[in-house]
Image 1 (tube, rainbow, N blue to C red):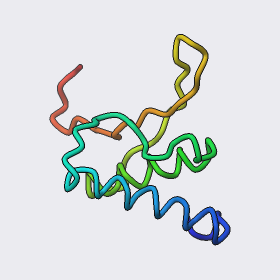
Image 2: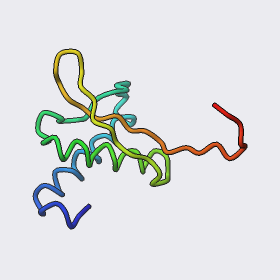
Image 3: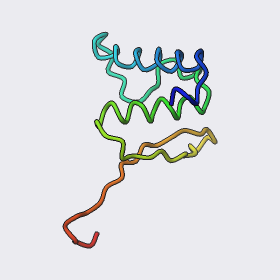
Length: 90
């Protein structure tokens, strides 16, 4: 990730992640929302969500899917890669 972002963009991403991690300490109950998301370019939002998914789940087996809202806005959904090892059909 660091190799793909210049120093300033990487620092912005880290500040946003730190802001998110501080929300519970500040008593913020927001479930969906990226602190300062208006200041993040779409590619940084994607990196932010990917990084948060790793921090929350503790593993790398997820991917992001771009979604379009009814109003035409675009965002990302984090989807875990899951495999049913029991052999049962879905």
